[in-house]
Length: 117
Image 1 (cartoon, rainbow, N blue to C red):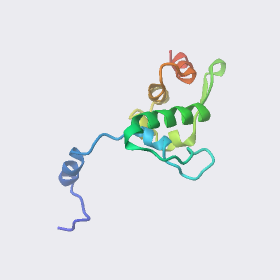
Image 2: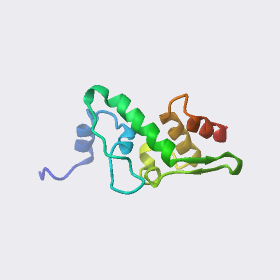
Image 3: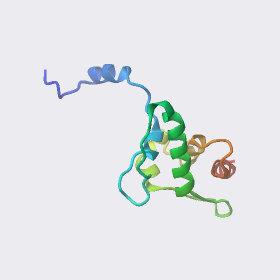
Image 4: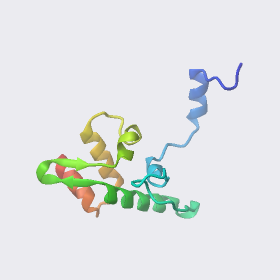
């Protein structure tokens, strides 16, 4: 057996114990483009809070909602990695998933949910 080849059953077994993917990592990594998140060091003790803060900062800086025109402008990062945020190809599902990443007091969250209502 070539250890570089993966049979479906072997791949499933390897992935079974893997922790769930946290899509907020996209807002913590830097790709070098103008619209990418800034570089920041993260500590394990505060990782959840740090990812929440990075997510909110990125989404609020890169997302625009025009309620009167029923238009949302998103960062390309959300389009490139769309499947990491929503399994559905439906735009409303993606917007709902983005709203779910934001805290209850976020005006962007409120605007997205109003648009989806």
